Length: 467
Image 1 (cartoon, rainbow, N blue to C red):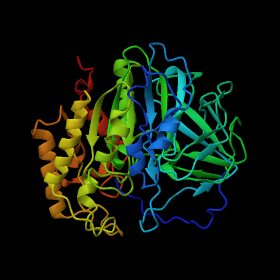
Image 2 (tube, helix red, strand yellow):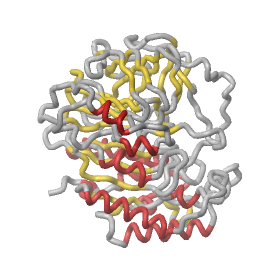
Image 3 (cartoon, rainbow, N blue to C red):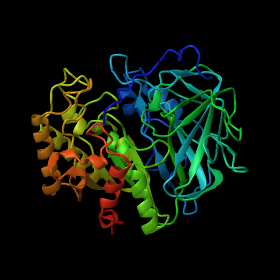
């Protein structure tokens, strides 16, 4: 999707006053069956993370770290139940504000995540993918979330990583906690609290979290309720939650941009269309189908900026998930809209055929890994951002590209199925535009009602377990 353009006062944020570790594949497909290490290295991913130097010898050294033997879930495996794709912090030449502290120092952050399927054991995934230095976590805990920053009495658990309560994540890496006994219901919320004792640049984040996180001075990870000094709606370092996989559990990955990320939905309400899809699947199939939201606001199929391009992050954000059998792809509107606007004024504008070529690459890679891939049509964006600094995102030539891409999604037969979100939210009297009742107000992003209509339009038979 595209960045918010609200003004943001950075005057209270001082880089020197914030609280107070490899390159990775976030969820290894081998995690369920292989011995489980708390640290994963992926050299190619490290090289793409802003070109920081990182030798193969270093990667091998970490690969040979002692492996913690842990008890797996009831059927011997783990499954992702919640995800947030890591993003880099962009440079100051990009207009979107960074709405969080640029570093943390002697501070605790408590972040809330609503799971899709439940379990009796939990593991938490932290990412330093875009960090240039080791990330020291002084303490970490997980609990069942109550209201706001509060946690439910008696549910608080210490998180350890290879048996250590304090741990360091190398640059470009992720780390996976040891399992903790914590019974989490389907669609329940957990609170993950992290303490940063040293000056910690917040270099790995998920910008449009749509969920309040609470920041307070000192080590307050075990506090029943945090009285925050500041708040943010972004995710910092937290990139995944796994549970012990129920029998026959499987995962659906939603891979997209801000419309998948939930821009326009109500804060703290879990009204993104993947959230509402998870609710429908729970009602229909019980506890067996996880929904993992790998949407990133500003994401594009072919180009980087607010996130690396879809072709570059597909392995990490889709193929690496254990038990994933389906991916729903909704991306491409930013490839069409960004060029010739303030968002990317000098970029060459891709054609509809260029975007389709990108889709075909993703389809081939999904099929090579045994995943079904469903294409979702691009929703209307007529006169998007008119009268704002982002005007230029839409014009008639760009609309023609959207129409051509959607016709290919619907009719080419290249995808294993199609979800026609365009037909669901467009205005019958002007198909270039979204119905006013479904529009956030920028002529691009849906509101809660729009996301509900999108989720309810999905034929669950399209997502049923493959034979």
